[in-house]
Amino acid sequence: MLQGIRPRDARVTGAAYTSRVPRDHHRPVHFTDAEFAAIKGGEDPALVNRVAHETANALLHRVRQDPDPAVVERLVTYTDVHGIEAVAELWARVGPHTLPGTLWRIYLMRTVIRQNPDEVAYLFTRGTERIRTIDQAVAGAEAPTGPAEILALADSILHGLYTGDFAVALDRGAAFCRLAAAGATSVADDSDITAEERASVLTVRAFRLAELAEDLSAAAALWRRDALD
Image (cartoon, rainbow, N blue to C red; front, side, top):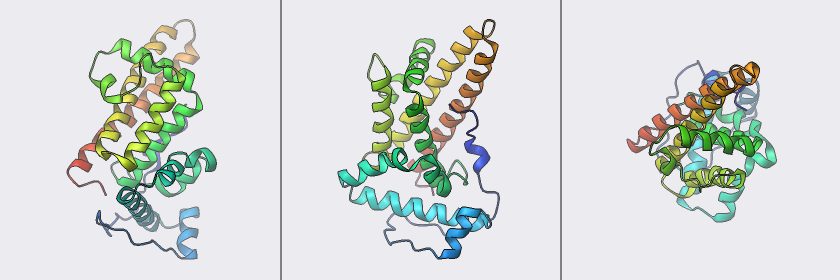
C-alpha cells in the first residue's frame, strides 16, 4: 500500500546539486567513511544530494552501456533481497524530477505491486474499465491482467530502465499508476457507504498513485530533453 510512503516528503531541502555528471560518466564513485555516515544519518543534506546523483548516474549509465543480463536481473530484483530501504537510503531523499528520485519511484512502484499483486491487479483492471485512454496500451500489461501479469509488468518496466528506452519505461510506469489510481478511486466510491474505512484507505492510495504518475511523466519529458540529472 502507498499510505505511509510519501515520495515527495523525502526530498532534500539543502543546497542544490551542483556537480552535474555527464551521461557518458563511467568512472567508479568512491566515498569516504564520513560521506557514508552522512548518508546514514542525514546530517548533511547537500552531501546526501550529491551522493544520490553520483551513484544513480554511475550505476544507470554503466549498466546501460554494457547491459549484462545477469547484472540487470540482479538490479531488478535487488529490493527483493535487500528491501526497499536499501534503495531509499540513497535515492529517496532527493526531488522527484531528478534521476535518483525517478529510480526510487520506479523501485517503489514495483514494491507496491509485489506487496499485494492480487489487489493491485484488481485495481488496475478496474481502472482500465473506468477510463478508456491510451494508458492501457502504453502500460503494456497482458490482458486479462491478473497477479502474474501485473508482476511481469513491474519487472518489465524496471528492465526497460536498464536495457530499453528509458523514457518509454517511465511512460509505462506512469500509465500503470494512472490506471491503478482510477481503479482505486472507483472502488473507493463503491465502498464509501458500506465500508468507510476502506474507502478512505483507497482514496489515499489513489492520490499517491496519481502523484507517482505525475512525477514519472515529468521525468520522462526531462529525459527526452537530456535534462534529467
